[in-house]
Structure formats: C-alpha cells, structure tokens
Image (cartoon, rainbow, N blue to C red; front, side, top):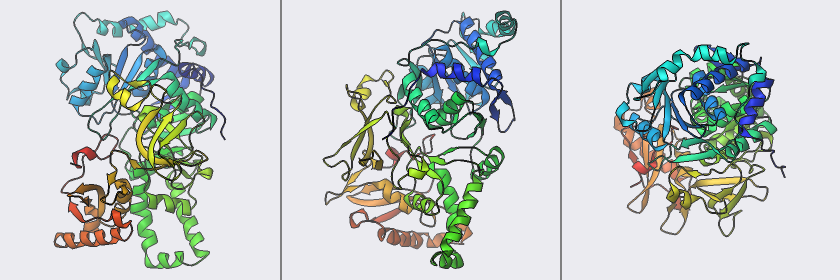
Length: 556
C-alpha cells in the first residue's frame, strides 16, 4: 500500500520553488509568446504584494479574479495566496449576473477582471468592493469613494525601487507565515444542480494535492506543461499551475478554446511531459479520427486476424501519441466519466492513459493510479492520505454513495452551514453524491450520480450516464440525456448534424434513423435499461462552464 504523503506548508512551497528555480523559464503565453522566468514571476508578485500593502489589503481579505487564462491571471492568483489573502477564481464563462453574485457573496474587497467581461457588468451591483483592476494590464477600472487606488498605482514603481534599491533578488523572496488550516481559496462550483456553492479550500487541501503531485513526479524541475483546462477550475488549477510551479516546471498557457486542431498544433510545439485533459478531448479524437479508420472494411477485416491486429493497433497508438506531442509520460483523464468504449479501445492499443477521480470539494483529487497500474473501468486508487467508505451492505459489489475523508476535504461551503452539514459530518466524512464500489486495493469504480440514478419498476438501479455513454458512440448522435418519462426511459438526443450532412442523410429520414439507433442501443443494454423512445432536441443542451450538461433543466 502507498505510504503517506509528506504535506508541507502550502505558501512556503512557492517561496522555496521561486528561490531555487530563479533563472528557469516559468510561464509562457502560447498566443502572445510573452515569457517570464521564475525570477521575473517572483518580482512581478512582489510588486503586487507592495500594491496590496499600499492599498490596505489585509491577510484574510478576499480578492476575486475573472478572465481567461494568462500570465497576469497566474500572477494575481499566486500573489494573493502568498500575501495571505483569499483568492476567489471565477470562470469567465459565467454570465455577468452570476459573476456579480459571486463577487458579492464572497465579500471580495478587490476584483481583477478582463476588460471584455467588465464591459458587460453593472458596477452598481457590486456591493463590497473597494476597487476593480484590469487583469489584462493592471489598470484601475473603478475605485470607490475615498479610495486612492489610482495614486497607489502611479507611485508603485517608485516605491518598489525604494523598497528594493539593489533590485528584487532571490533572497528577497519571503512570504507570509500562514498555517495550512487557513482558507486560501474559495472556488465556486459550476455544478449541474442549478446553483453555485463557494467551496472553502485551505492550505492543507491544496498542499495535499500539490505534495502528492510532487512525490509522484507528475511534474518535475524543467518539465514542460501545456495548460489548456481553465485555471479557475480546481482540476486545471492544481495540476496545470500549482504543482508545476512548486517544482520548477515550464508552463505554457494556451489561453484559447482547445479545439482539437489548435490543441494538436500546440502539443506538437510544446511537447508536454504530462497531459491533463477531460474525456471530451479523447472522445472527440476517437469519434472523428479513430472510429472511421477502424470501421473501414479492409481495416475491420485485418483487426480480426491474429498478429495483424497488433500491427494496426501499434500504428494507431503511435499516431495518438504523436497527437499529444510524443514526449509525455501519460495522459491523465479527469473532470467527468470517460466513455467506456473509448476507454476499452485505448487500453487495447496500450495507450498510456489513466483515469483519476476528484471534485472541487477535495481541491480536487481523491484517487489516481499511474497508467501502468491502472485498472480499466476504475477511477484509480485512493490517494495515500484519503479514506473512502461506500454506503452499501457489500461495498465491493453493490454500489452505494461514495464518502471520503482526509486532508484534501474542504473546510465547508462559504456562508452556507446548512448545505455544508448535509454533505460533511462532524467526523470529516464528505458525501460525494457519486455512486460506486470500492475494491480491496482501494480502487474506486464509479457508476453515476446518486441524484441522477433512476429506480426501475422492478427495483433495479439504473445509471443514465452508462446508457448515455453507449448512445453517444452511435452514429449521428452528438450528445444525449436519458430521463424518465411516464414511468419509462426516454433518450433526449441532439443529432450530429455534421455527420448527417457528410453521409447525405435527409431530414425526412431522421425519424427512422433515430429509431434504428434506439433498437441497436437496446441490444447493448440490460432489459431494464431499454429506451422506450428517442426525443429529438432542436438545440444543444445547456452546459455549465465546465461543459457538463445542466441535467436539472431536462429531468422534470
């Protein structure tokens, strides 16, 4: 069994890293090619610290930030937490009303926001703020009555030179002494249940994730990382920013929507040593590039011949490895369940991938296994410091709600003791809302969300996510939701119009095409999981900023 992780002080991790890696490359923006070494990053952070000090920001005060991933975004995040204030990252995809609500609810004193988002907001709606700064260029966008923020910015360079007359040097890096039990971040979930909750993450929660990443060498000194997941989300934040910056990695920020075409180009240039991605990326590549290839008559025939199949699989594996830059140790998939068919195929061709499991409330990691030890169908083994309990009479075989406990578990939801009490008990056990089983070696096997589980007329538990995974692999299906309608299962389907056009399927045949899909699907599922009808959706499903479907809009 794994040994415990040595969890050190979260803030001191960066004090040490910035000093030791002073001359190494730290941050690069893929689009603008702007570049900072660790020394230049530490100097920029020191300037923000002096600004905070000048404008009277106190340790424990909240600072909100909303904008696309950029060097300035990283500087504000790192400067805020190393100053001893609390960072409140807000996904830029949230609508302006939700952004205003989070800024107000979090009691943020200052707000860093991109100009494009600020133009859509109503300043009068922001109640507790003392001032607003542009995350694009650090200019003051708004100062409240009596504040002297503009003056503080004007005098900043002079004061910085006065504070550090010989220039800012590695020995000047000294950050606040703050216990790991203190809250350093409030991360508002973009959940599918209809409202955001402010997850209070402590130094210990984040250090639990980062120190695990360091000890397992997910990132290492001078390794290369391509950050294309939103840093405002716990997954990207922990493993595309916090862990690499704690060890001296070079992080390239994609800073734009990671379409497969853009991503493949960036991967080939950056050649990351580790790839952190969500299932959607792999599933798109599988459906658009691999599935058509292995479905061709000659290839399908070849795959049925012993030894020849290995040759084909090795060629596909090589092509996939090249897609991700060719120099990575593994691809870690997380953030949502990976389609079973895609997972089985990647395992069959020996592609170096693994699936982890986490949630914002654990900052985010709960379980992970290196790819060589990964069990197909699992979500990895529990982290060394984390415990799990399945609310079931037979935890290894009968799914029950997964409960977890350990240093990564949040302090609670900000200003929401009622909801905190519903998920977190006085012994530290967190109810995840996920249904699954737990094997003897600590591997977690997830089935679906407890809130989405449907009880059949015969008493069987139906997990819609499992049926949707099969349905989404069918031709002409872009995305789907399985719901209960009048005591029977129905599938809401948004068609893949590109595929329909490509194969000249007329709209007049749409109904019969979907009916054939329904019949084929029903041969692949258990009798109690069969779909009674398919309902055509005219538009894409509404999504959270994390691109999860807002199920609550469609299940009633």
